[in-house]
Amino acid sequence: MSLQDEYTKQISFIWDKWVDEHDPWTTPITHEAFLRAKRGTYNMTITCQKNVPKEWFMPVTGKKVLCLASGGAQQAPIFVALGADVTVFDYSEKQLALERMVAERENYSIDIVKGDMSKPFPFDDNVFDLIFNPVSVCYVEDVEHVWKECYRVLRQGGAFMSGFGNPFQMALDENGKVSKTLPINPLKNARLNGADVLNENDCYFSHSLDTLIGGQARAGFCLTDLYEDYHFGATLAPTYIAPRVVKQ
Image (cartoon, rainbow, N blue to C red; front, side):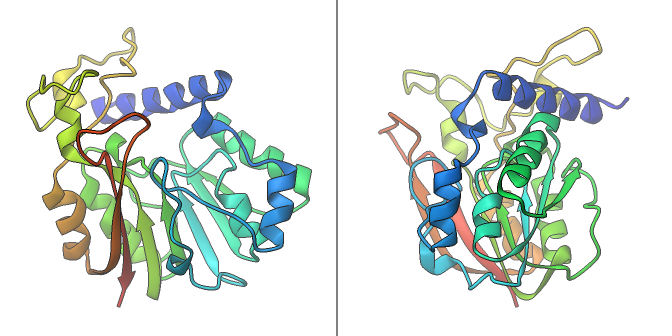
């Protein structure tokens, strides 16, 4: 197994552990919230606190939506409730199990695919009308690969929404002091082998605005909007960035 494959495997184990610990980002939608979404009342986050603007969403009834690295039954069920044909692509088995649980509870069909987004996506070209990608590319070394794959599988005129960390925040410690040198690459800074367990606090790639925002433009996307968001308790600088781009 390559170092990259071992890293990705351990990230999936970390998310499985967070499911067992009932982390807020692994708490599935309630039955009541699903019913409200069917009536058109819903909110979705792609970063931390701010809701994604409603005007970012095209009418999704009958559209094909890819929830990328978005397992956990928080966003996909809402898209289903709004009438979309939804595919969830994630690498955590327990996050995907939550998708199956909610789909069975609410009696709907959903396409659930386990896979690693650091590799070529297991989808044909020009398949999806919308891609929704909450904060997750921090676990991928080559983020521009993800943007290129999203462009490939998205149809002409389709929208791609993503959330990712502000690179500057990766240099800070818990007290807001600069303590690390960027860029941060856990494949180079942490020793990985079959006997080691990746530290949950030291498993993120920092990336750069060049690869995060510039990379989407180089992949062919056109920026239509962008907002910033803060992590809970953060005040020094915006912690997250969320762009909306389209394939023209």
